[in-house]
Amino acid sequence: MGIGKIFDISVRTMATYQRALDVTSQNVSNAGNEEYTRQKVVFGTEETQAGIGMGVKIQDVVRVKNDLIDKQIYQYQSTYSDANKRSELLQQVETILAEPGDYGLSNYFNQFFNSWSQLATNPTSIQYRTQIIQNAQRLSERFKDVYDSISSLQHLLKNETVSKVEQMNSYLKEIYDLNRKIYDNEAVGIKASELMDRRDLLLNELSKLANITISNNEYGTVTVSVGGVLAADRNVYTEFTVKLDGGKLKVVPKADENSSVILNSGELFALTELYSKQIPKYKSDLENLANVFIDKVNELHRQGYTLVQSGSSSTDIPFFGTLSGGTVVDAFVDGKININPAILNNPKNIAASGAANNDGNSDYAVNIASLADTKFSELGDQTILEAYSTILNNFGLEKVQSENRIQTSEMVLQQLNLQKSSYSGVSIDEEMTNVIKYQRSYEAAARLIRAADEMLETIIQMV
Figure 1 (cartoon, one colour):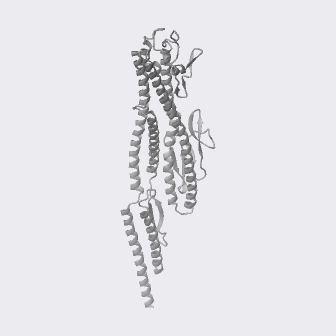
Figure 2 (cartoon, rainbow, N blue to C red; figure 1 turned 180 degrees about the horizontal axis):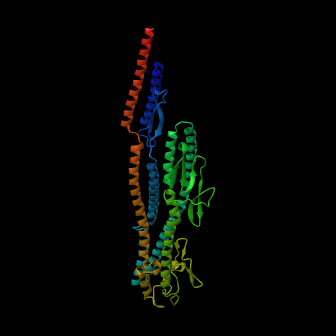
Figure 3 (tube, rainbow, N blue to C red; figure 1 turned 45 degrees about the vertical axis):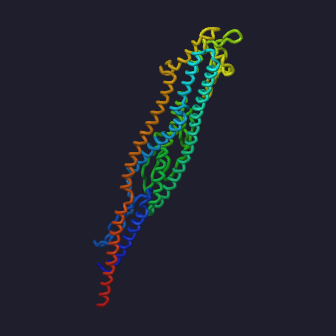
């Protein structure tokens, strides 16, 4: 080997290990950056000439990552975000219901029925009759407050869904832009590791919003689908919008609102499902409870007799709503239980007696009080309070299930992130070992130049 080749190999080697030291320095400086993916230098032998090696070269600088772990993280991140958002929203419903407690509907139902029991002990008492009206008003006001609060929450869910979809669109636009930049760089041999790290961060944020699938393409680009709909690649990205269809809240592509985005996890799934299914069910269950309560109280009250007024007592007076053509109307409107104005204006119109012109009779006061313990087929053979407890129990079960899923997915996520950190994270010990190794190799190449220089000097002196 000629002295010129020794110089050439030595210089090439020094340059190679200098670049390797640069990569290692980059790793060390980002040791505390969770968004950074460790880079690894892959060395190769320089092409040979006539069977003689030409030294070492950097064959590639690769990002050390495990795509399988990343995809599992996206999956469980989506599941965790769904459960967490669902639990957060159910907590708001729990606050609205205020059960158990003085402001819970259970307490107001009990107070209403108890006041009828009190009236049964003294059916002519105006004070007890006034208490019935007051308790009915409190029940009506609290029921309306619960109903309206749940309706308001439903409206907020729609607004938050719109906001989250706009956020998702911004992520997809940036992923599309990054894909193009990554392709342009990698296609001409320029590494785009930092751009890929940024894209990975966006994919993680995207997975919090919805279930996504990712496939890797040439030159480091990816194709992303959201709910089975193509969302972004190197050539295009999709903008999504929110559509209200038959009371169901849906996320659809702007360009084709008839396409279906099949959400099964992520915050958007929690928001749309609560809006479309669970909140309407809560409202429907409350409406059914109110209507049965109103119908049963009215059915008995219309059979009873009021206090004697103008020489006689009256009957066929509904406690809730008013009569129109023999039918009770306006008893329950937009979540409000309406008390008959005739009763509000005159407590004597409360029908407690079971006999005409007999103010001392309290048969129907007793009968209405006993409704608290009566099971109704319309409520699944449950009492009014049992039916309400079932609503609360079903709600509580959903909340517990969400919290269990939070714990499970969080535990799995922690394990996956530990695996990712051990695989893709920066180890200071390993990097410092590389620094020493590359530095020694650099110094060895420098000594080789010195040796070649001495050889050249000896030859010159011999001439």
